Length: 281
Image 1 (tube, one colour):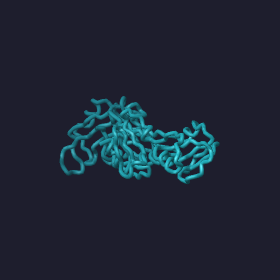
Image 2 (cartoon, rainbow, N blue to C red):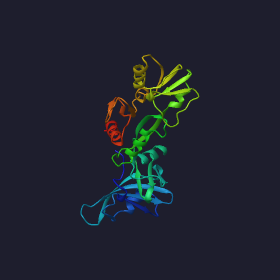
Image 3 (spheres, helix red, strand yellow):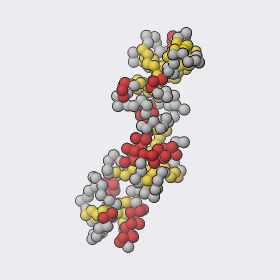
Image 4 (tube, rainbow, N blue to C red):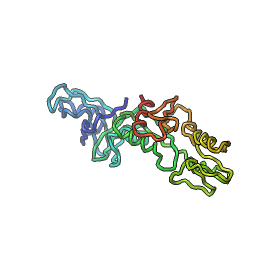
């Protein structure tokens, strides 16, 4: 389990005048008292930072004697970051900073001048695979909202991977190209058709879509069609990395097969929450 305060209200930031060694920290807080909400201390001396868990005498007094300290991190393994765009209650944002700083404990002075920290020996990777345009992908936006909801206290680090329809379009060799529907950013020098408009397709064309698009085409036009697959479920690597995709075959909630959680194409945030809970029980 990562070392993470339940709330920034449980953290005391203190500037001290002694070197932040284990011995100095333990000796300087002997016979001291601490506020009832103080479960952690962030100690700073110049650019050096350390983090400490505070153990207090049981009771209901507003200030109680400190009976012990647990050193969580010392300056050599701790970085202090000031970034007002970071919500220190968002564990995923802190986990990304841990990754960026090679696994060191990160202490962050962030949004609203709130201060907290995260020490995580293991980060949880999440691949989010979705189709663009439009950009950003809908699934990436929903995942960010879910991770910032306060429902997850695990150090999940998302990687957003896009399946770019326009990259697929550049592979098309036929005079025409068929897209499943109109979407912002779609364009081509070839003749364009949109399958949901059931157009009269009068030139040889390539369909860019999924299995459902191919089935719809064959049902309408009663002939096979050359196609390029953009189904995230089909294209997701089977490499053990927890992965979230959208799939038109999923009607509600999510389905999980191996390391892949699939949510509906028209997913909402609660579908994504269920998928995250399934991938990281």
